[in-house]
Image (cartoon, rainbow, N blue to C red):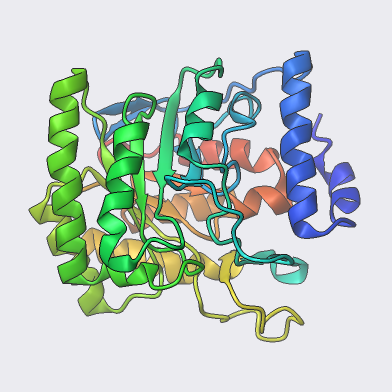
Amino acid sequence: MNLYPLLRPLLFTFDAERAHELTLHGIASLDQLGLPRPLRHTSQSIEVMGLHFPNRIGLAAGLDKNGIAVDALSRLGFGFLEVGTVTPRPQPGNPAPRMFRLTPQEAIINRMGFNNAGIDALLAKLKHVRYKGILGINIGKNFDTPIERAVDDYLIGLDKAYTQASYVAINISSPNTQNLRQLQGQSELNILLGSLKQRQTLLADRHGRFVPLALKIAPDLDTSQITGIADVLRRHRIDAVIATNTTLGREGVETSPFAAEAGGLSGSPLFEKSTAIVRALAHALGGEIPIIAAGGVTTGARAGAKLDAGAALVQVYSGLIYHGPALVKECIAATKDYPPDI
């Protein structure tokens, strides 16, 4: 039985961030009691980044930054989960209020600012999870690390996450950490990815296992920027690219009383912009590097559209807030018949 339509009005009476915390802790507590049963959705498995995914639908980073509900979230039927973004040191993030629901538009604006308990706390949590599926760890830099020293933070994150991650996502595209998106510039990105790829090789030799790297990019890019990013991704043989993070644009929400709030916009209005980035990336990459699509997936049809645009995998987050666990099942059903080599 899908209870979420009954619970959503109650949750939406709370501040958006408070409702998020209540939900996450609530499902984690229920999981510890053993009440929910795992949802198993029949689908076609696929291999991406050398990893075997039971289905194409994953949970995007941001919903469970600190890994407190991994087991509970795994019960929703996802083919993979991504936790974080985590930084080398704990940080509180930006002042509240910092998350806003734009309910008529099925959108969210957030300026959380990489609030998290730090990567050591995340890894301590992950040691106790029962989930054995594909788990991505999304890493970022601390807000007070100068942008010219950002590489150091990402190397710390990669070093620490390596043994517990199925793949590591490199977040350089949040709009809520000052100057972070500068790292998408071709010169800066070349230095960052070169350093990370070199470290990945060393870690693979040290630990006897290869952990793929996926770069998460913004939707607010022009054609020349996309081409430049694609060139750097190919040059360093990065294992995947995640497209996209939230947008600074306000197309589709101009009439909302929250439209002027600072932060990144996610949810339904992001769909067209993020899908256009996927399509442009697919053209620029020519199939050499797989794309994980995120942004505006609120229906199964939209998940299928991401694959049609050239993605291999799809992630959801904001759509889950508005539609609940039924969205996961719908997206898996809509994408299960796609050939494994798209």
